[in-house]
Length: 462
Image (cartoon, rainbow, N blue to C red):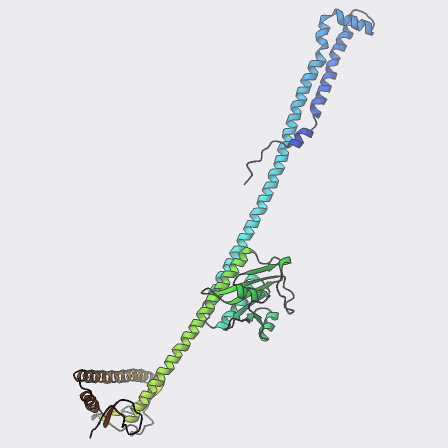
């Protein structure tokens, strides 16, 4: 916008120093032209009176003729009128000069406005480009769940999208004493990764200070005071940004540029957004890895328990049934020989083969692949049904145990005498399945023959 305080009035120095050339010239010309009238009139009077042209005769004619007095005022009036005309001409010229100066000023203002608009448009385009780069970056790393791949892809994308020659990510160790470089985009940075470069948290390096203080550091141009690694002498601007997760610094994003003043405020804000995105992605990947590890451990434990239970069950009793035209009959496990034309499908539960299904055609034709797939699906359902049946049996056994415990506890509550209580305990425990002998002791067992017992009950069951 044009400043409203400005006006088209000429500057004071221009008004004061501008010469009144037109008014003076016009007045001089007017006076000179006006002098012709009295001279010609006097000359005509002398000619008419036939007098010689000299000063005495001129003075005499001027005194005797009143009309010459009026004609003698012509230089004065013509000079005044000519001066007024020149003064107006000077005023018009000054106004014209002021208008020209104002036109130049407006042109200068327009040029400045155009430059500002161009700068704003360039800044806006740069901002839009940075935002597009950040959106592309977030979309590319959103699906990456492996931390090394995530970090390597992040530094590569930052270098490509923001045109800086080096980007690196440091992560803090478990003790939070060192920041170890994990990935870098430049050749010099890759050498640092190969040699296991690390920075102590809190030292004088840029990365060390950011890791300790948790705030952005932007060093550009003459203000650059970063610790230059001999392998990266090209750096003339550096910015380091903290990686925050739940208010705690887990690492540092370090970006280097070959240009002076490379990192503007807008770019620093965008890079901080990317650093936050990287930190969140790393945290999510870690949580996912931990969850998968726990899930795998639980799966392994469950599979091991299932394997042990089924191995014990199959060892105690092997079950096998055979269907023939005569009906279903029980056969010893492993007693039936396998036929080469038989379709055998294993019954697998959590990776453990707990049985098998053997199928044989009446006409002896070969089995198709679709028949095998159908038999495998049936075998899977059989495995789940067997597992459900086993779990149901265990549930019933626990229910019976809980019921027995409840009944025994109820009988205990009716006994007030210690001896009667001990006898009741021995008797009730003896009723449990597969119990041959029950001994209940009360007191401190200081010797092998239990002579110091306060009370003891032993009951044999036959």
